[in-house]
Length: 92
Image 1 (cartoon, rainbow, N blue to C red):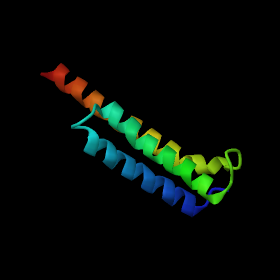
Image 2 (spheres, rainbow, N blue to C red):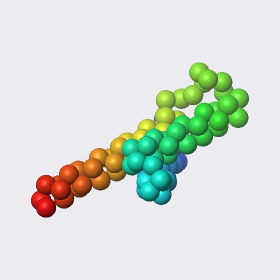
Image 3 (cartoon, rainbow, N blue to C red):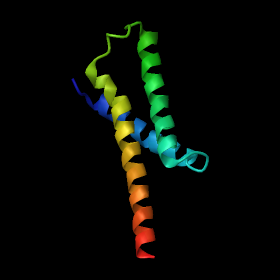
Image 4 (cartoon, rainbow, N blue to C red):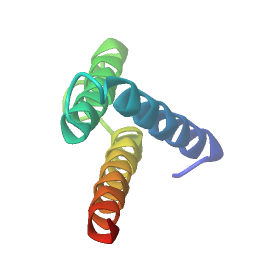
């Protein structure tokens, strides 16, 4: 069941992922830094599940929101930046 806590956690992770993506952007490409940010949350979710002793198949589907929402937000961020660059070049 999707509770307010799950949505709050997923939204926090999405914001943090975009912040990580933008902070790593000067070092890596925007797409690579987004992949790194999402990988951090994927590893965190796997580690949390193993720590709780649930095993690999005991994860409820709604726990995937903590990875899916950061993934979607990083893709949107990278796409918007890429589109802005395209339109800036085109208008110049």
